[in-house]
Structures are given as structure tokens and as C-alpha cells.
Length: 332
Image (cartoon, rainbow, N blue to C red; front, side):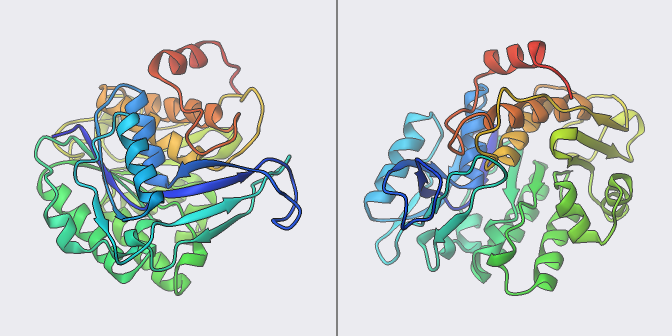
């Protein structure tokens, strides 16, 4: 039994050491990534227990991922190895401005064969928060069904559900399927964490409050919208910010709506993984009894920290470093 549960696809990543195309760059550093794995690393380093489920190929990449999970102190006891399929990977370019390009090698990967039957075997008893991103249901029809099954099982078990849409349009067969699936999961979530561009894409609305109301009117417990350098906007219908339907407990009373300024990063090296870090910071804050406003602030700080170094999870802080950053960093 662990406080936090998540599942998805972990991948080996090769990060270019210098700018340029694959033909031009000869040196790459190796790392691990995957939105839910990044999240699991983040909450574990902040002092919380996390369980991570996935299917891996019975190959060197799979062995490397299992070793990494064990080293990070994440519970990977439910990992499944399948010799029929390979573990996914991707290449990431280096840039001095903007987002790097990524090239995936994940089609028909072992993780893309996670199905509802796998979710039914997972033990939710004692779990306080279940985290899912929109990448997992985009991997295959099996993963889509598994994601819906997991959210509904968590709700049945009175576990708080946190959902980050983490849109990857290229993974979906159509924009209509993407919108329908992600919104279905969002409507059944206690905490929904879209970026502002994602919220606009999924709703057709523009302003943060309009986007938040779209989800609150359809069953979502609370919405925190990531606004990049500007910080985050949060909103819930609940009186005094207390979300009484959020899993097995309540969110600390606080403002029901507000803007939370961002933190100025030391430098911007790599923006990939910022949303996963935000989710980890917000999740831990809520489990520690803090308000939506305080959770958004912790998420902002985690995002600012992770983008100041390369790698999707290498620079994720422990609790002491996070608190020190929040105390001394400049607000935007």
C-alpha cells in the first residue's frame, strides 16, 4: 500500500549534448522519462510513497528502468515484463530557446498493451491519490480502456483522482477522439491540471475562468490551469475552497478562485517535464493538508526548478530544496 499510485509508459531518452539535427550531433546522454514516471520521481523525492505500474519489454531498456525505479525508492513491485514487445525510447534535441524536438520510438511498445484487466489487478486500498496523464490513453485502445477503468476504480475506492491532459496530438487518431477521451477523464477527476493552451484546445474557450467553469459544471472537483511564466489560475465551486468530494478527504479551506504568480527560474535549459513537476508539487501539497492556492504555488516552484537543467527528472528537488527555493526565489 502506498499513498500515491500512477501508471503509464516509461522510456529511455537520449538527449543531444549540442544543438543540431541527428545527423549533425554525435554525442548524447542517456536518461529516463515518461510523464507518470517523472511524477513518481517528483513525489518520492518530496518525501511521499509512490507506486508505479507499467509493462516493460524483457530487454536491456526494461532492466535499466526497473533498476532506476528501485534506486529512486518507488514501489515497482507491480511491474510486468513481456518478452513479446520492446520498451519504448526517444531522442531529444538540444535548443537554447523554446521547446526541444522529440522523436519517439514507441509504437507497439510493451506499455501500449496495458489493458483493463491489468488495472483490475492493482490494489488501491490505502492509496490517497491516483495520478494519470492523457498520454497513457493515447497509446492504444487497450490503454484508453485501462485509463477509464483506473479512474472509475479509484473513485469507487474514494481515492482522490488527479488528471493532467498532457496533450500529444500526434498520438491520437483524431482531434475529436482526443477531446472526447480527455474530457471524459477530466469530468471524473477531482483535480484537473491543464495548461492554458490545452484548456483552449479541449473546450474552445479562451479565458482561464471560462475554461475552469466548463469543467466544474460537468463534475470536475477543482481546476488548476498552468499559465507558464505567469504562474497558475485555480478555481473550485466548493465553499471556501474545500473540495468535499475529492477522494477520501477534504482539501484545506482557502480561496475558491485565484491567480498564483510563478517563480523566476535560475535559467531555462529544458522545458520538457515542467508539467510533471508541477503535478508532483501540487499533489504533495494537497496530501499535506494545504489549500488549492498553496498547491498551485508548490507546482509553480517545482516547474521553475526542473526547467533550469536538462533531463525530465534529474533536477527534481527534495522537500528542503523546494522550500528553500520558494522562500528565496523571485516571484514573477
